[in-house]
Image (cartoon, rainbow, N blue to C red):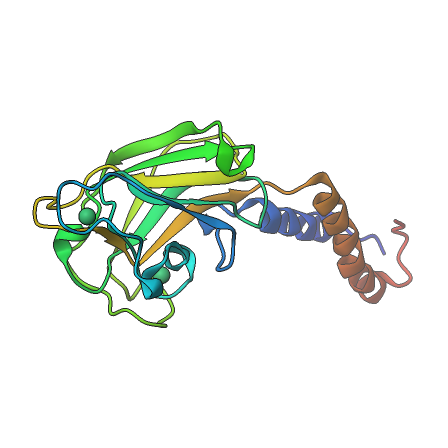
Length: 223
Ligand SMILES: [Ca+2]
Ligand SMILES: [Ca+2]
């Protein structure tokens, strides 16, 4: 009985798709190294450090608790995703629990291949239009289908290992004493390392082997 290699090729293709079809995945995870980026206070009475419960780590903590910076204009954060080199092609920003005037009104995204020290290369910049809807703070898991957010997509093919996201302007800087954001998701693709691809190749063979034995015992197809 002759058997076709097509099912195996299809399975192999699916495995490869699992590796490469990762566009728009969230490429930060809570606990990734993150650095506070201060901006410039625009004349209001508040210019101290972020409140203890609203530190920069809350920008990527995976829950609705917010990050707030009193050094408003141009503030943000830098992050080194533990996933390694990535190509970022989008941002998703979730609004905080109050004070609509503090929402960012524009963004500037830069990438570095040598850590937080830079050099930083511009990836994308533009206006934002975050919803006025508020997301309650605390430890509620972020969910784009449930929580108020804006997704921004842009063209980029360059990979980086660190990112810096800053917000040059606010919805109403004259009324705001700070910039605040509940969560920022960097969307993109993880670049598999050659060793990872090799491991997946072995895993794929291991996955296929029992099926070959079960389906093709006695066949003339050899691998
Ligand atoms: Ca958060
Ligand atoms: Ca301020």
